[in-house]
Image 1 (cartoon, rainbow, N blue to C red):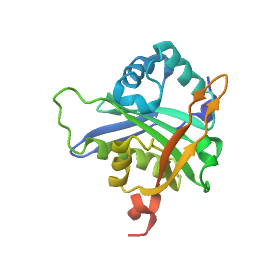
Image 2: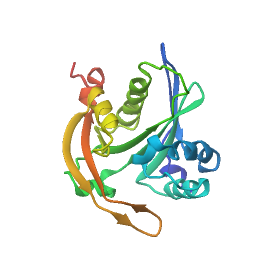
Image 3: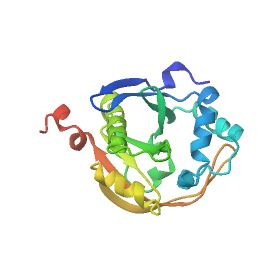
Image 4: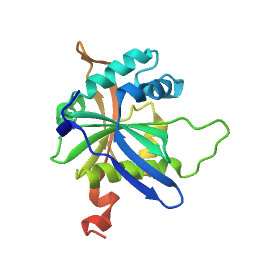
Length: 206
């Protein structure tokens, strides 16, 4: 398991009219069952883990917990699992081969929990994205969030744009085939969110 210095801090905030959002490091021993359920659904096909066993998913996140550059976090709302947040240093990731990485960039991947059948939750995703941006830009102190959704995942691309992300170029992320990880080639649409855009009041740019 990683040394404590490699673990990202937990963060909790109460959002009026929404609930209490908490972001904490994912525990592969206890969180794998719910994550496996999410990544096994057809809607999560772009996450790239459909068809994996629960044990394999657990191995992936146990390995990630040993890294200094890539981290997995569980987002909860009022104590219930709401999203899987993965952060990474773009300079140590294949996306860093496809654009000019700036100091202070932080890459993220976000997988939302499925909505219960018949549930209507207006604003739910926007609140979670705001909490994620606040965590990465204000709590961790990064200056820019980078996302790289698959170009075929039009819902995710549109969701980030509605959240204020500036569209970037379409790129091809190269295949990675290593003993501990395999990632197929991916055509992605980059998008960026700066601290000044997301939280102008915190940067004096209002």
